[in-house]
Length: 495
Image 1 (spheres, rainbow, N blue to C red):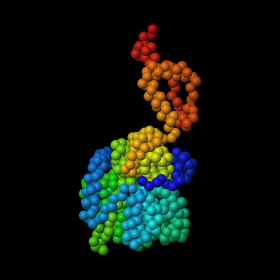
Image 2 (cartoon, rainbow, N blue to C red):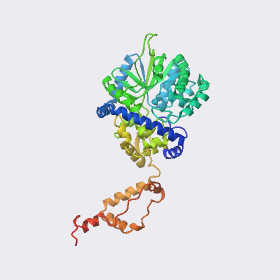
Image 3 (tube, rainbow, N blue to C red):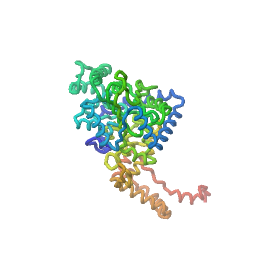
Image 4 (cartoon, helix red, strand yellow):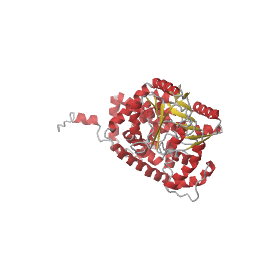
């Protein structure tokens, strides 16, 4: 996976700074609470939601177990429909392939559909280095791009911005990217949307190359699917002569019948809609000049850490993710810290387990992400494919603390035990020794009981931060073993 956001500190430091930004916290609180409430209503309408959730989980798990077979089937189907499939092991290879494909067309501009995969590999920056300008067409992504900002949410990348900030960005930046904002632009949603529409229209009409991701790929027919709410994706997918789709290898579903499940669960979990306003599907190329769709289609399948993640029996469930963002909207940590604190294009609970697996835990920020959670379990409750995020977080914490050997980029990498956990490791070793020696344990318990009045109310040193908001348990006046013996197995004879 490509590097973290340049200059980003580890999560604790970034989150500490973010929670003091009152504007940011207000924007996040309003947006997440609104989406959360609407989603709950939409899901409650479906009587068999639990069955759909389980079906989605089973389909994803089956596909991941047989990913090699379905990838080959997908390539054969796409090729038979007139498309060309490219395989990319990592971000650098994917960027190189896409840049070469754009250069072959002779164009220096491309329009883009909102895509997490292209953000993950840093495609826009790679194309810019090759003299190719990539224009985001999703409204929120446009705001982020014009504002020289970073996305902070999977579904709503500009969730950290309010209407006044968006108006100011449009006024100051639109002219440098194309059609300027209208004179006297206000912060009303209708005017902001119209300004974006006028700005993007000229790019849609002149673009010869479009770049997209895909929400799903159907192996049996080679069909790709993009769901969206604005229609900009439909324009990018149908107007350009050349379409390049960059998609993670885990986005496959075997059949159209399988796709049906996710087209029910994704919109309700993400935008709280019964169905997406725009569901675009394309299979291969079109031959007629008057028909909608590209005459040349390239599919770039990226691994970029996914095969390594698949090898982890606990962590692989993160690959079920359908990018609905429901976990972000219920997470108390995300609501207060915001998406930028995670230092990745994948913020929130899913980012806390996905990024450290795709990128590894060697960096300070990736080692900190498994701790960016209260383990409350709300993320698991709302996940439409039942990813047990708390389980994976604990699993990754163990990896960070213990170090050891993991597979990254196809190579065995030895990780050093995390710094700052020496005291924890020492305490656990001492506890392990004591439990193996009952006599020592009994003596320690008696000493603790007899010295209880001298015990501090808070932990010293690094432990002070933990006990500053928690009460230390009071040591009983008598160890349980002594009480049990004294009362004859819990039956006090009074003697």
